[in-house]
Every structure is written in C-alpha cells, then in structure tokens.
Image 1 (tube, rainbow, N blue to C red):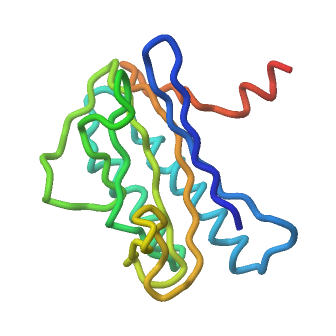
Image 2: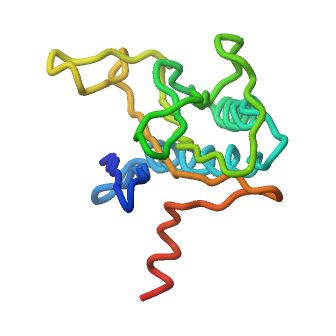
Length: 167
C-alpha cells in the first residue's frame, strides 16, 4: 500500500488531497482497509452543507469506520484550507469535545482526511520527526479531499474524476 498526499497552490489558494493505493496485489484485509478509508471520507463529505456541524461529519466517519471493524486515528485531523494550507477549524474524524462544534457556513473550505488503522488507533512519529506509523505496526490508509461548503451541500474541489472525465 502506498499513500500519496499532495497539495496545490493556485492563484493564492491551497488545495490538499490524499489517496491510498494498492501496489500490486494486496491481501483481502488490506483491500478492505483501503475501501473503508475511502468510503469513510465520502460518509463525512455527505454531511457537508451550510448549517450542518463539524461533528456531524466526524460522527458519520467514526460510525462507518468502527462498524467496519477498524479504528480512526485521533492524533491527526483535517483542517480548514484556503490562503494557508492549514487553517482553522480543525476537522475531526471522531466525536470530541476538545473543540467547539463549528457550524458550517457557505464559502468555508475544508480538508477532510480520515486516517483508518487496521489495529490500534494510536500512532507514533519516527526519528525523522515526519513519518507517522501505527504503534502496533498494522496497516493504515488515508483519503482526503478539499471540499467547499455550499448553501445546499458541497463541491469537491479536488475531485480526480472530473480531471479524468475532461480528457
């Protein structure tokens, strides 16, 4: 499995996107983990609209992941994104009372990025001070999109299917 996390900077604005891909054949358990991580992202995105709350999308992600037998990493969150790559608010992928439950407004842009582990939800940072791994050395998968909140729902600004369809 390979995680590819990329960003873009265009006309003063940032975008952020991530995919996890299978390299060659993977085990059925690894394939399921990748599928659940991707679907968890969309379960969260489906909650996005003006007037909804951040914890609505966090709960949808957490419920889907846990019902599938996996764990959500709590050490990292999504974030607001715009003129800066990382802005407020923090976009949790699990229910928490650590931050206010922000009400979404049209025009907000969020990087939603659940990280799903096969084993423990806990991670550690390697000595390079950048690489994160699971504490129990199990597999992990992540997907991310930059999403614009609209009055009636959302627009996925990093939708790769649009790029492929335009070719």
